Image (cartoon, rainbow, N blue to C red; front, side, top):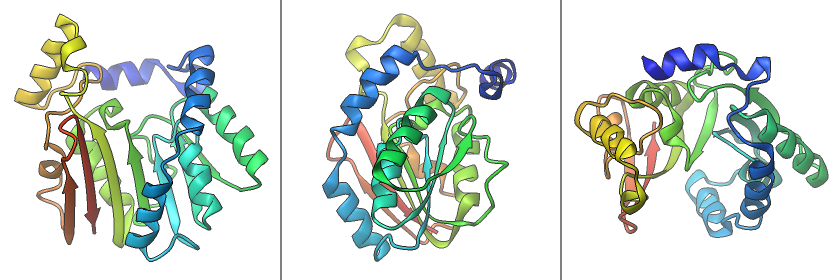
Length: 220
C-alpha cells in the first residue's frame, strides 16, 4: 500500500525520474560493456531462435539487452520507469539501427501492453522494484503467450547482506516474513518459484549456483 501510494504521487509522465542522470550515464556505459553473450545464446537455444519473436524487456534500464535482442531479430518492447534511461536506450537503438517499441511506467503499469502477446519476457536485476511480488508475478504471466518463456534474474537478500542498514534489514525481514513491501527489499533466496505455484507453469528451471542470485526460467 505504501509503495502504491508513492507511485500515485511520483509520476514519470509528469517528469519524475527516480534515476539521477549523472549516475545513469555512468551506469549505462558500464552495462553496455557487459552484455552477456552466453546468456543471449542460451536464450536463442531455449526459444528455438529469436527471429520474429515478440519480446518484452521488463525493467529494461539503459536498453542494452533490448538492443541485443532486437539485433538477433526479435520485436522488442522496452519497459521501464526512467525517462533518462529511455533517452539513453533510444540513442543506442538508433545508433545500432534497430527499432524498439516503448512503454514507460512502473513495473506493474502494463495497461498499454496486450495480454498474452509476448513469446518471451526478460526480467533482469530489477524484480525488487515491483510494488507487490505476487501481483507482479501474475502481471508478467498474463502478458506471456501460451508456450511462452519467462526469464527472471533476481538478486536476493543475500546480495547486500553485510552492507545493509538497520532500516533495510527490517524491511527485508518484513518482506520475508509477510510478503509486505516498504521500499524495495530483495526477496529471500528461492522465493521466486513459490510466487508462480498457483499458475499453470508447464516447466520450471532454477539456477542457484550463486547463492546471492535466483535465476529462474518458466514456460507457460
